[in-house]
Length: 131
Image (cartoon, rainbow, N blue to C red; front, side):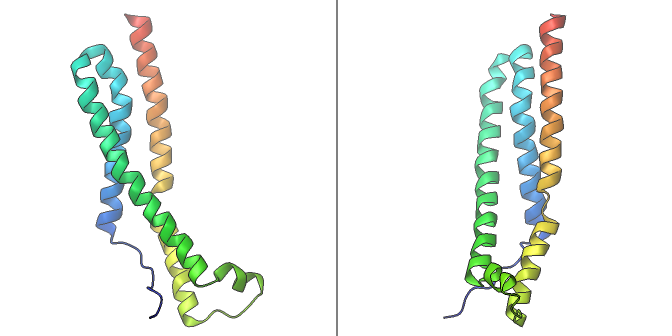
């Protein structure tokens, strides 16, 4: 039985998981606001964040495992180190890997989470110093 060829997931899945990750990131940072405005909302918002991250990071784990498995199954590192010619199938896998990285929104996600974290700190400091 041959190796299962890896493929990039459809755009709607990529964007759906990205939005889920952002919702989770916002939820965790919003906890600080709800703590000041209405503490009864802290637990539900925490659950939105944690359940969203559960799905988001499991998806990211699967993508990472798929990429590593493709590299290993096709011995791509060894072939590149040996300057060996890549077969048509090897090239398809390299294209999958590069396309997967190129289409990934993880860099945008990291940047938004970074900015939301700074905003959350600023909002919390405003609450502390203005109340």
